[in-house]
Image 1 (cartoon, one colour):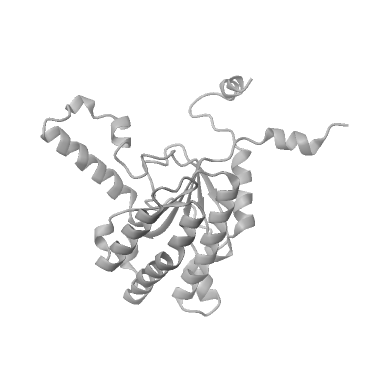
Image 2 (cartoon, one colour):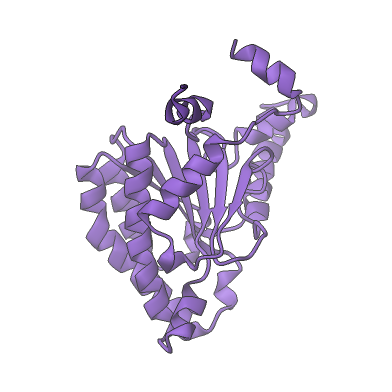
Length: 253
């Protein structure tokens, strides 16, 4: 009799190189427990640790977390202030641990919108971990996908205006070299928790061929095992990139 366990493992495709996560549901998690919204965000920090551990142990190269969107400034002032304090607290507490575990930190987004103190903490964290060669941990903060594309376009427009680049050289590939995370693999998998099924202006250029995984769990309830389950689900998917299944299969013969 064939070993079905071995057969099932053989059918699994490679792990994603780059996972992006929209961490949704902190507020609703707190509300259901009659807690202040910031309690949900603090609980979500525990999930961040668990997910980083699962990705690092599974061989994922890059993990990008959507921590604070450019639209989140519209939230109540006390919640926004609490989130900024929590971000600063997390940087103070976690960066040395990241370095110890060979994890490189990068913050993407319009960092000029943050206080000088927070900008300094971000710069220090990035500098401390810049030589780490393990998992790349990217935190998207004051980030929006449309902003990302616009800033890339401005960079190229300036080069054209200066005569350093010809208009006909402006291609999708060239633009893609100027968006955030251009030095890393494109996201293979995007996970969104909280039951919503949209990408909410997150990495919209980079998501052209990204697989989507939606979890009904609020972010504080999405932990180590749930991350492993999402990775395994990805491994069952056939990624064709415009080709047929037969063409994809022929590449692996």
